[in-house]
Image (cartoon, rainbow, N blue to C red; front, side):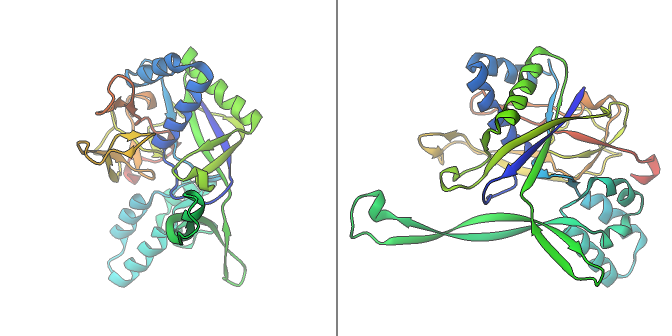
Length: 326
């Protein structure tokens, strides 16, 4: 296994932080552009059938990792009986969406220290006002301009000075982790990513790209030393569909989403059957007994079974815990 970190530059507002599924879909589109639809179909099939290993993380602030919130809250709750004190500590953990990667092991060893951890990254949900100029769109001067709002998220790095004052700085540099084996398909996928970094290619990771939203630019890619293949404990950094993990020993939080087919010409098909699927969220602590390559899986899409897959191979970041800490 080889691990890589890919650096991205945010070029405008985002409506949500892109997860590993959305990232995989965008990268598959790039892969098909470069190598053709047949090669892309081969890649999707090989991922689904576990003939190759390819894992991705969610998009996250560069230099940070998802905070293991549920793990920290569980361990703090075991040591605190006072309701008000516990409420305060939980609130402090809740706003810390991401923590510095070099602080992770310290926080896992001493969960109560997370309350005072700086810097950290927090997520704010906002509404951005937009205008639709119908008179221009339809060439009818009498039509009025319509105002509407678009939900956006802002990730801000929060630091603290010597006087205890907090300072907020919007995050504009992001990253994701990529893990691949030595197969030819993965080599092509990696080569595509390296070329995108050299060319500083743009990638669309969400809706409303024509309005300047959800646009990122590739900046660089660097191999990360150490595969973590020998570890037993991992921090989940993506949308994980579990295959072979130790559920009892892990500390997990589930995220359930609705699946609907999307057509480029018509958008979401409202009349299509509704399917729901649950993933293990980022920040969960995963215990793997049979190797990281067996932890996750991808499955057939319920809508286009011969072409699409539901990607569930989340990148697992190796951590070091003792059995008594989980």
